[in-house]
Length: 218
Image (cartoon, rainbow, N blue to C red; front, side, top):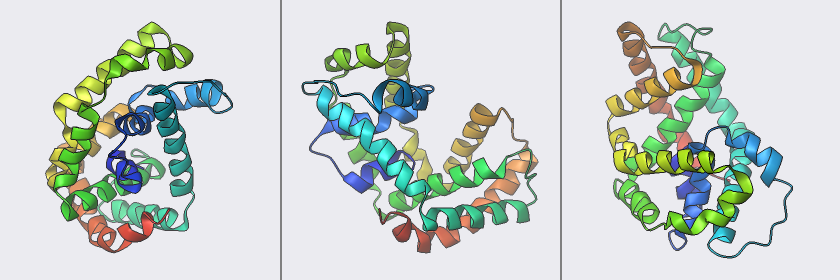
């Protein structure tokens, strides 16, 4: 699941620490390794707000597992891959198992934004109330000081840029996907392939309007 979908499913507006915890695995480098090695089987005696942060982290992985293994998500990814291929993109170069997956997640967030434009501001407002200085005890359990600095630096950039607001337009969604492609699989998308990606996303989105509700039934 993408950022906004995690927030939407739980709508934990009353608990910013939980929302921050649900975001953490997506902004911390190699966090799945941290989760498997230090978090999943740990029983720490935490105090608030560390307890809520930890619950958010656990919930992130719980939701991702349910979402990624759902029949609805697998069908949506298959549909997306077909549209990417029809648009003329190279299946091997862009690793459709990856690109179809992330395209569905990004467009699902976009459907939430189009249906409720204020949701993005609400999400960032909740996160802006997080006091990151209160999580030192938790970070000491899961990371080095250098790793913590990198995570918090990424969080501050995430807050400053507020890139989710740009997904209100398809161009913004394409730009976000293009950066993800470059970062994740180290492919610089050409202008020609960017046009093909835009066509594919428009075609995927036509179907996502009908699939989004089912995808979020978790």
